[in-house]
Length: 229
Image (cartoon, rainbow, N blue to C red; front, top):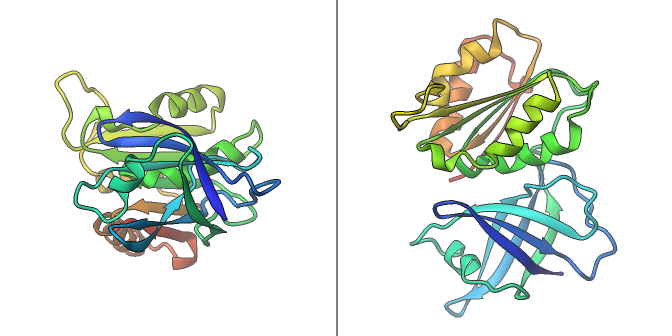
């Protein structure tokens, strides 16, 4: 199976939003939170990398990814060098980092491009009668609050959705939360023990938050996570 690049947009320094399509399919089926694996030949060897889908299902054969360029990485520079119309090999969506059923009030904790699966989930499930969701999103700089406008609009459209960005290196005009996401967990949880918690980001954050949640008494079944190493 192949994926063809339809368009890309730079949404932060070194971060792009890609739109691909799988033209040989009638429809691309996936569950929000799943990933696709892309493969191509780089420096005479095949390299495969998995990327969380950043779009909701229901867009025909198209899907969206959010990727940051790692200059010394094996694959991301190659993807950033693609031109519209270029193709890469892909495997069908896989993964178990999906919302538990039945849905209930949830906390989503992301850092960096770990926001991608949460964008997919929220675009798919937020409705006037959906459970409450809090998105706690940590980055270094305000310029890297990926999809900020979308999440702020979601918070206006759905009173049960809270968007809580936090910066570790805020500028002088930033007046919202600061520091790592770990510093705001207790406030986001609000003393509740009946919610599900989803984590996505680099391994140190995920591991640290899992330990904090364990100490707070959360059962491991309430916590789902995916690490971006």
